[in-house]
Structure formats: structure tokens, C-alpha cells
Length: 117
Image 1 (cartoon, rainbow, N blue to C red):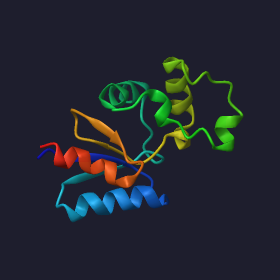
Image 2 (cartoon, rainbow, N blue to C red):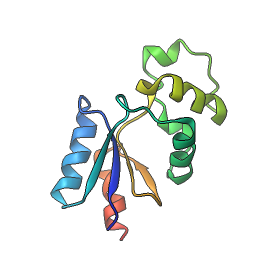
Image 3 (cartoon, rainbow, N blue to C red):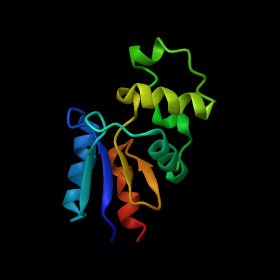
Image 4 (cartoon, rainbow, N blue to C red):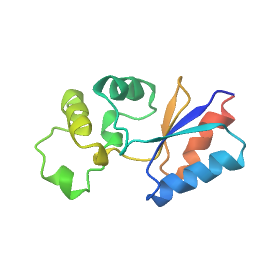
């Protein structure tokens, strides 16, 4: 089983729950604290290409920071630019095995990467 990268915010309960679920299954997890080490434009594009959802699902649209931006959620280029400039707006957690990525909403969804093998 490949190592799963978890795009993680330790202050987020859903992110902590996803990490606990993966660790309980004995999965090797590489934790990427995306607030400390933001994703580049290229990394976001690659991640989006592996995601089961569209780019809109990656944005925390309820955040006041998002509300102040003039970004068209249907324009992937604008979404990527906004996430690069404002990494706090990235939805979490996201689990990525290098072939496929899933949004951990609910946290149990990250187990799709484990159960798929």
C-alpha cells in the first residue's frame, strides 16, 4: 500500500478524525500541514486532477476571507489562484495516494483509498 499524504490542519476536528482513522488502519501517512507548507499552483492542479470532486469542493466558501474575494467558483484558474494566495481556504482534510485523492468530508471518506486496494 502506498503512503497516503494527508493535507492536514491539526486544529480541525475533521482533519484529526481522518488522521486517526488512517492510523487505526495501520496506513503509512505523510502529513502535509498545508498552512505551514502551502501548495503551489502546480501541486493544486495535480491534486485536482486526482480528486473525486470538482475544484469547487476544495474551497471553504463560508470563510469570511472567501466572501471578500471576487472569484468565480466555476473558473478553475481563479479558484487555483485564490487557493495559492489564501491557503487557509483549502478544504480539509484531503487524502492523496498519488493516483487518487479524496476529500475527507465526512472523515470516513478517506478510507476509500485504503479499501480500494
